[in-house]
Length: 267
Ligand code: SF4
Image 1 (cartoon, rainbow, N blue to C red):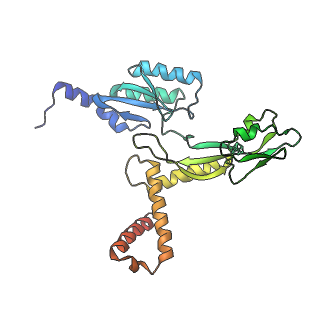
Image 2: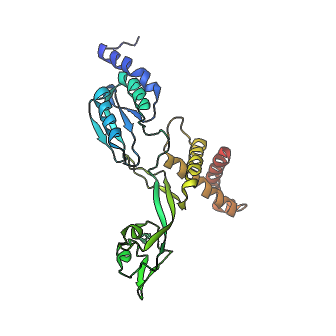
Image 3: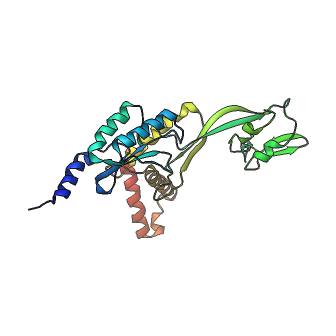
């Protein structure tokens, strides 16, 4: 028969329910405590938001807030018995935890630009500011190499004569990157999405994640996207080499077939 020491029994009673609750942004730590990841808007918050997070850290945790590389504020040392109450208060006070709503971490603002010839005086500040050497001053005129320009907008913000003007606002979207225990580069979907396109794109990415993820619980978006990309390139390879697989030898052929079956089964 299984027996528990008093301290072990207390540990289980304190944490059993909360481990099953599976709130977004709540992670278990050793000794039965939890930390709760309160998210910010890519590092931006108003002061009241942080004051509330600090108040909750004192009320339900051990009073410690940890700023993370993912721009969240972690409420540390929360006993299992406090998780439910803390999350209720988080929801009621308008705070959000990691995993709730859209994540804007991978969105980078861009601006298409033009030169106002009347204001432009050839001072060269825009060329100094450009980090990819996309601007050169030729015969007193600014020449922009559109193949090099990444629409970062530095020259727009930095022109002392306001001669570089933004004609259109857009965003690049990176997905699946992280700087956690196993850092990974994000995947660039495409440059210059409009603001109106973003919600639909995020929705499509979320649907892809749900469709192709292989683990029952949480799974990193980057891992799923890599699998999808790998399967897609194998599919393209198969379409190109259709009928010629035998030249690769039976081992390789079976390996390809396995992956293609996996891919088609999930479509
Ligand atoms: S938008 Fe950025 S990359 Fe393009 S020319 Fe200006 S500074 Fe250079």
